[in-house]
Length: 64
Image 1 (spheres, rainbow, N blue to C red):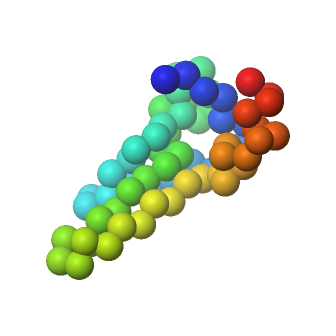
Image 2: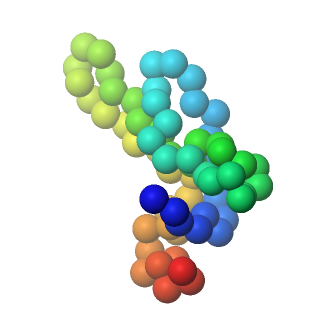
């Protein structure tokens, strides 16, 4: 899936977390995680972290 990531932060993802969305090869910095997921092994609780909430707003989609 191709998308535009206009502004926001990239993430540093370490084990046991997983990157679930990355910036593309044509962005700067390229191929960096911008959304990550962590699931607690015992309780099953989940945490999702995104570099910018702006990518989920209507204004962002109209840029594309």
